[in-house]
Amino acid sequence: MPKFTRRSSRIATAIALPAAVVAAGLIVSTSSYAAFSSTTSNEGNTWTAGSVQLGDDDAERALFSVPDAKPGDGGSNCIAVTSTGSLASEVRLYAAPGGADGLSEHLSLIVEQGTGGGYGTCDGFTAQTMVFDGRLSAFTSAHSSFADGAATWSPSGSGSETRTFRITWQLADDAPNSAQGATAATSFVWEAQNS
Image 1 (cartoon, rainbow, N blue to C red):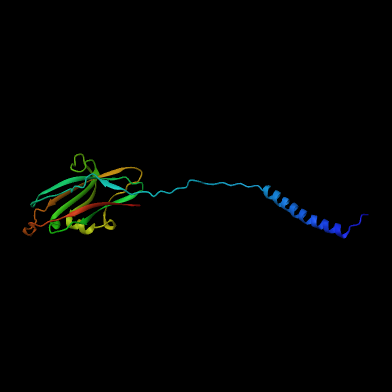
Image 2 (cartoon, rainbow, N blue to C red):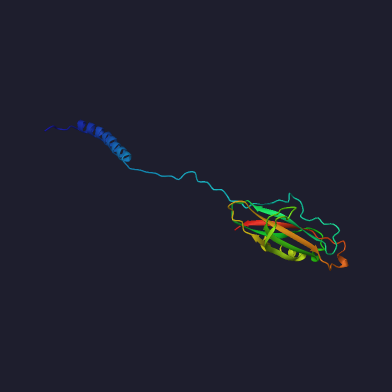
């Protein structure tokens, strides 16, 4: 039987230790490449906010500019309001303050919603809904913001939708002498908010 000397024993130990480290590295390296793996991904995610959009056909012109009205005078005009937003919404009508007042309690106001007609002409207008019938003063006090606005219609948001509004006014036959020279002014505001 061969005899190991001290020297051969040290050489064997010196060779065995690095050989063991290399062998362990090979085993770990091979086992890490042998694992199964799989991934999946969902790419290209984006978000876009919807819109609520209203416009009208008045080209920034007033529906009424009436000087020298006398008791019994009246008139009407139409305006087409269009929703082009992508969200379902609710449209309400209200009055924004317009300045000096003193005549509004003597002006009757009728607001109808329907189809046909447009700014400057009510030809072909067909009324479908009565929005308001009373004094201008009652309209401006009851409907002064979206929160208390008169409900008109609810666009679906699936495409362009138009409603025409016919607004009719008349100065009361019994307007008193104190109404002479008085004025009334307001802005009609249609506002949409998503529902």
